[in-house]
Image (cartoon, rainbow, N blue to C red; front, side, top):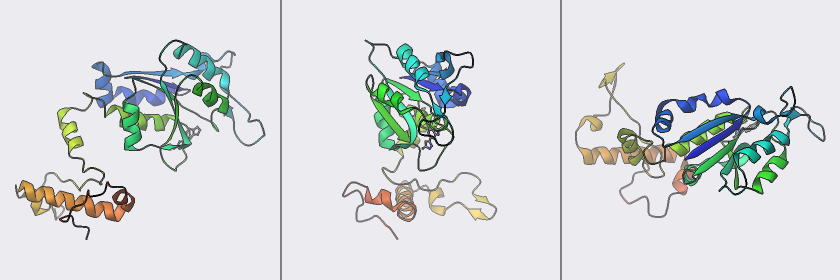
Length: 242
Ligand SMILES: Nc1cc(-c2ccc3cc[nH]c3c2)n[nH]1
């Protein structure tokens, strides 16, 4: 997968060189490039923003640098990327959207700043590539970069070969659609708090049932909406929701 990020703060994307994503890049599974949008400005001050038409506070990102960046990065005749733009008005980032994006050969991320990007940038982009506005949640950030880091992590961990065996086993243990059960490790007792005996019993069937029950109870208490979204028949007679 090729990933390009347009931003006025390319250093914000430095974490993409670390850990699993950094290793995937070294192994050629990922090609990630952050581009400073000011590369496509035309004035001595490298201006990317201006005051909003119609008045109002703050500044808006001018369209010209974006258009020049598209012209260079997405020339005619080349299969275009999906343009992914973080926005409070975007579609919620969910595991299913992450899986959909993970199937794309090329993602181009656009990081807004200030009060946002001139709408004509999104309209012009839609004439040449699929556009997806995505929201990290109903919380307002300073710009798109942090959201791009989250989307890139959610997407790239789904790519074949990116997760090592240990991590992919954790992935397999995901209790489909439910929250995870609590996890424990050594020491067996810590500040007079013991690890649940069942987890040290060696009885794998009992352990699996305990984890399932814990996942169900946690989901029912914290995210009943996830229970309601489960496919019919997911919960069987032995499931405990107490
Ligand atoms: N989910 C979410 C996205 C954003 C976001 C995205 C882009 C910009 C540009 C200026 N402010 C922004 C905020 N906040 N919260």
